[in-house]
Length: 396
Image (cartoon, rainbow, N blue to C red):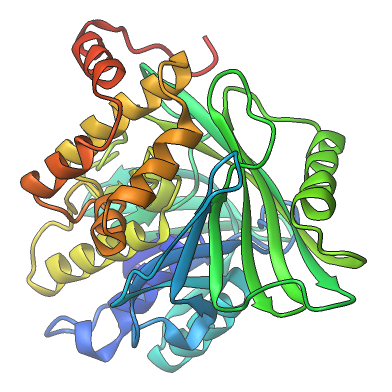
């Protein structure tokens, strides 16, 4: 006997988005689906507050959870020359995970979604569907069966790859004693930071007001830093580069995102499917995941509404993944200067096209137009060697 039609594991962006979409009246199948959402109990298995960013036109379905958005984007080169672009009709939007969770919780409460707090220990196929086993906060066993199971728990490490870089960062939410930020401009990449030998590093500033902002230091490199190194880099960037004056840190966030050309499974059983980061929503060349998770959840909901097997298309098209593999390899080998590459792209490619390119929503001719703005010789050399490189486990 099934406990639900669908079990969704994980209460992050991917899990909440899918559970909400499956139970929303406008996406329900002819027979409403019963959906159970399994989340880790409060404690170490629940991640801390996170920030998710994406770009879309005004009036999006998640605007009720958006903390701030920006109509102008800035990229600054190592020499201090800044490129400011208006990506209209797109806007750059920021969602904080606590805001998203409150908004999604209210939606799910109205829909009748079943909620279960449990540490998931195993997910497997069983006759007629899938089974989730685990235990609750008191140690009591939990078992749920459903026709379909969608698992958003992040993988321990990516699979074999030709290139794996880590996007690792620490951010400070700061409040300054004097106005120091332009609330209308988001700094996507500020390369006035020391650069690693392989990869790249940059500052990232999302203003929340004249005296408040999220200020991050980010690296694309092979290994993470220790906490003191991040704080030194952030302190130097805030005081010497941004010159924001006296400030207090009101909150801290940090993270590590695998940027890899590893293959991610679309299915791990007859009735079990990975979603979110586990299902390959992270764009290998940028680290963005939120928009791809929404495309994935829409495809799953549409398949279930039509009575089809909910095997969603790969979150990123094969052509986009191939281009990302070339870029990652070129950065990792040091063949291209990452700061010059990204600054040049923002300076020479119209902003709406570039953002659609970064989201994998451009056509072949547009991809070619963007590719012609990159260093031709090192990128071509990298593209030619990739098919002959072995895929190795992460860390080997």
